[in-house]
Every structure is written in structure tokens, then in C-alpha cells.
Image (cartoon, rainbow, N blue to C red; front, side, top):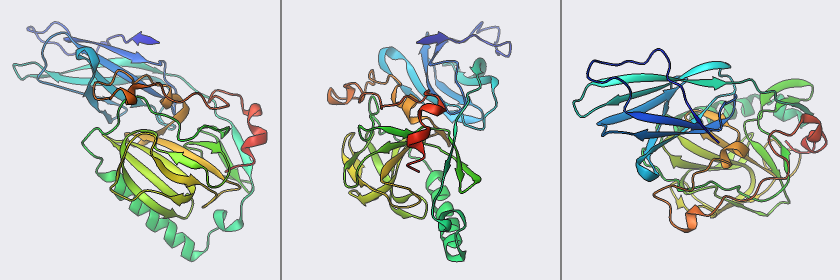
Length: 321
């Protein structure tokens, strides 16, 4: 569903330019914390430059079908609800940079909680483990520092495996009686050793072991978009390797902070985590860079949708971390 965004009163115009020379559409609106969307910009005259931002985060605009530009946007779990300005800066051939703001409605969204019991070392790690955790956080922050400027992804994203969804995005995690984290991905059930596939074309940013996530693969899809795959039994790719959508990147396992074998799958966009289920539902098949194979529909839905009530997931969510 496409909703035409309304221009706000902060629209900047000059005598020579009585309005923005493009239309903008947002799919999936109104957005909620943790939800991604698609912005489509259709220029009505040549532009020398065009850029966008939401919540102070850059929105990368890429050439799209039918002369349009596409941007992937997201609302973070900690972003405020209400109206948020989507800012577009543009320049005509004359070179003068102008700016326009559009109202994006951000609505509240309730997320469930679940309680898990894990080994004490995962909630009260010892001195050596704490040093390892701090080092890994620094290393991960360094990986995020310079995203690839090349768009590597092509067309729709797919689930890394077809299986039951045992925990949804955004769940408040209570470990051994204490609130410890928000679940920034989804958990997909399975047996150890089953294959895990790349959700889209990308370059392996990280392939190795981490204290909490166990054996881990992170794919860089370019322009600040990443997918993450946790708790693998084995890793089948190496850092720097370019993989295509559907390539087996590892085998499902139970390494790291887990209560059983499963895959934790996450999507990071412009510095925030968004709901992978909603992200995989974005319609990206009109990608002009996609081959015929890459434009086939994404894999079917997981067993339980992200919008399922907490009660529907309590029994299975407690079984997997």
C-alpha cells in the first residue's frame, strides 16, 4: 500500500521554484518503532543532487525503475512516536540547494516480554568474559564505522531458512529474573546442522565467534544495510567473500548464549535494527540491477507473523533464546 506524503509548512521555496520538483510516496505507513519502509521519489524535472534523512540518519537513495529513486527507511526501537520529518535536500541544474520536509506518522507498537533461564555465566560473566565482551563491542563498533558505498543487494530479500518462528522482534528479554535486553531480530527454529542461506547478495563483513552470539556471520549489503546470523554450528564463508542470495553461509547450531539450536536473524539499517519479518515483506522486485533470478518473489512467510499476540508465542519463545 502506498500513501502519498503531505508536504509540511517547513517547505523551502524561492521565487524561481514554487514547489519541490518531485513527488514522494511511502510504503507501509504509518510506521512504528522497529518498522522499516520504502520511500519512492519521482522527479518531475532533472535534479543535480538529491538526498534524504529521517531522525537524523541518512536515507540512501538509489536509482530505481521508471526514473524513480528508492530509499529504505526505518524507525528505531527508541525513536519517539508522533510526527517525524523526512527531510529531502535537492539541487536543480542551477546548483542552489533547497530543502523540503514531509510529515511521517510514527505510531506506538506494543512488544511482548518473555522470561528465560540461561547459564549463570551469560548473565554474570566473569572478569575474563567481561573483557572479551568489551573487546567484541569495540570491534563491532569499528565494523559499523565505514559502511560500503556500493549497493550490493539485488531485489527482494529472502528468509535464510524456512522454519517456525519461535521469537519475534522487539521482545523484552528477562534473563534469570532481570530485564537484560530487547530482542533485535527473530528466532527461527531448527535442528543443528541444517543450512542457513544469505538473505541477499552481500559481502561477508564478519565470520567468526563471539561471546553472546556464538559462531556469527554478518553480511554487508552496502549503503548501511546489514543482515546478521547468530548461533551457527559452523561458518561456511570467510570475511571479504562476496556471496549471492541463497548461498549457504553456515549451518544452524546452538553456540553462544542459547537454550537450544536455532537461528537468530537480524537486519540493521542505517545504524538501527528493524523487524526482519516486515523488512522481508518490502517489495523490491522492480530493482533495475536485479537479474531475472534475483527478482523472483521472496520466500514465503514464517509460521507466526510479527504481529502475533504475545500469548501465541509464549510457549515456544521460552524454549529458544
